[in-house]
Amino acid sequence: MLKPYLKLIAAPQLLPNGIIIRLFRDRKFGNGFMTFQKSLVPIDSFNGELLEKHQVSEHWTKKVPLSEIEDIYQKLEGVKIPILPSCREPEHGINYFLTIGNGTSSTIYRWQIELPEDWEVIGEVANTLLRMANQSEINVSTRRTIQWT
Image (cartoon, rainbow, N blue to C red; front, side):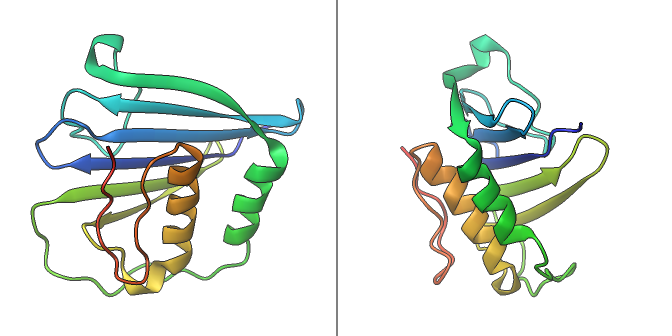
């Protein structure tokens, strides 16, 4: 069975300290896993492949109860998210990428600085991942940037 996953990348343009959070579920074993990496180098790709050990200042993996992961996926099931949301002019700042996939296909939601108004559920999922990784949240109502430490 394919293992669905979520991946959130928050990457300041041309600066270090970006983060990559991955969440995997595995019904066969009844749990899931979260991986976290905080970068010492700029993350210049939305693919966000695993960084080499010498490129990270913090990294860990932890088990996550399947019920917590299922709650996240329930938020996404049946939700209609506009493909081309309203957006503003690009600026220098933090790029965000939320990837939702299952091994053979995926969807990447990308935004810069502010979450598009039509993507509230994407912000909720991103915030849930950040909370699970003990990072600061995106303020969905005012759409401010993440301020993590």
